[in-house]
Amino acid sequence: MIKISLVGDIGSGKTYISRLFNAPYFCADLEVKKIYRNNRKCFLALKKIFPKFIKTFPIKKKELSNIIRNNLSNLKKISLIVHPIVRKKLNLFLKKNKKKQIVILDIPLYLENKMNKKNDIIIFIKTRKKDVDKKLKKRQNYSSSMINILRKNQLPLKKKQTRSNHILTNNFNSLIVKKKVKILKDKILNDRSSS
Image (cartoon, rainbow, N blue to C red; front, side, top):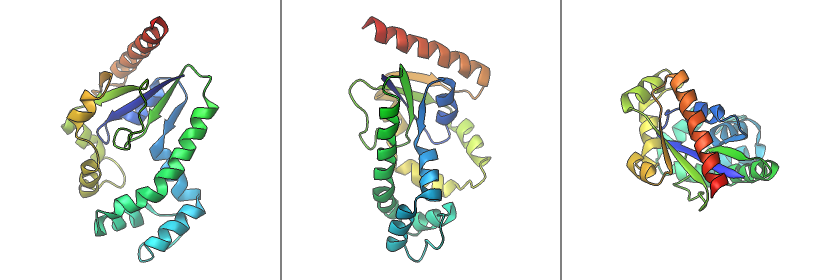
C-alpha cells in the first residue's frame, strides 16, 4: 500500500484533489466534524475543560472558535483531546485498506504532528495566495482572524514544499487539475513498481 499525503495551505484544494485520485481517502477535517457531531466522550472532555464555552451537544463550531479566540493556547488543549480520536480512526482506515494499491491522506497537520513515515509520498499543493484567499472568503463561516490563527499553527509553506516528494500546482481549473492528478498518480505507481 502506497500512502500519499497531500499538504499545502488552508483552502488550497487538498480535499478536492484527494478525491481525484480515485482511491480510498482519509480526510481528517471530515473525521473531526463527525467527532464533534457524534462523540459524547469528546464533548464531555471538552465541556470539563471549557465549561464557559461548550454548552450543548453536538459541539458547535462557533463555540470552538470562541475558545480559541479567547486564548490561542486553547487550540493545543482541544488538539490533545481530539487528535488521539482522529489517529484511532486513521489506524482503522489504514487497516481496512491495507490491500489497496494506494490510499490518500488529507491531514492538515500531517508534517507538524510528525505522522509521516519514510516511504510515504508527500504531495505539496501549490497555489497562489490571492486565489486561496478568494476561495476562503466564499466559505460559510469565513473568519480571516481564525484562518490566520490556524496558519500560524502550521509549518511555513516553503518548509512543507521542501519536505514534499512532488509539487502539484492547483490553479483551480478542474480540467487541468484532473489531468495533472492522473499524470502524477501514474508516475507514482510506475516509480513504485520499478523500484
